[in-house]
Amino acid sequence: TELKPDDLSVRLSYINFTSTSMTFTSSGIRGNGYVMAYPQLVDDTWVFLYLERYDGGRWVNAQIWSELSGTYYALCEGTAAAPKGYLYRIRAVYYAWSGSQYEKVTGYSGSRYY
Image 1 (cartoon, one colour):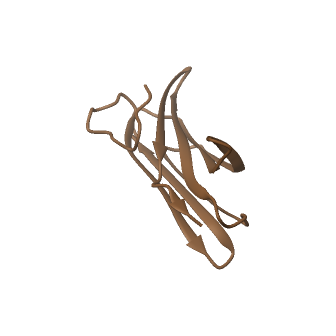
Image 2: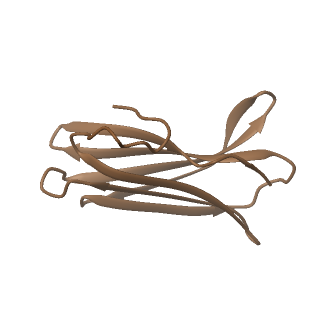
């Protein structure tokens, strides 16, 4: 299942909640992604965060972070130095695993100029 953006108004089988955000700091651009699944159903959760820059008419990856958790929730955070004058966003891909089955949700932060 793939939902865009973080809209979980339809109940999923494994994933209960996601949150994707981007902030600007003195060190660069900070991405944050959080997933929470139903604890009695899920073995592992996984977050992939992609800092994306709009360049040449398309979104390109500027930085990637990931976090694998052996429980029903996972938090992934990262900060990257980035050139100014571009439009940026965070794309997050969330996975929840139950045995050999998994559920996938994609979320986006808002896009902003840095």
